[in-house]
Image (cartoon, rainbow, N blue to C red; front, side):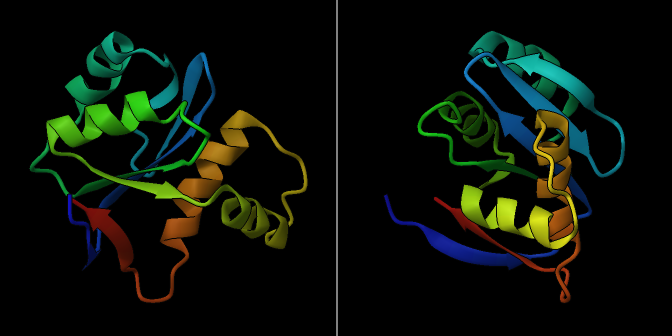
Length: 128
């Protein structure tokens, strides 16, 4: 599989924090929120069913040592843009903005905000 880097401006960004059991969601357009179980069925029924592959949307998660595979594989199969971010960079961004505490909801919001704070509005997204 060959990956390429695409620069694109997204209208909607969804930050997610993933654990072994659940996925916390923070949507830039507030269309989605709350938690979803980290299973293929739950991701399909509660998340993918509410996303349109033709919509200009990007989902951002952290590399979690494997827990992200359910979400990332499901999003790729559905044709939804997804970015797997470096956890240290996301955490450093949050600290730099004064968020010293660490919660799942804050992590999800940080991923979404990190993308929105880019000066050029573009985001590098690796796609297959």
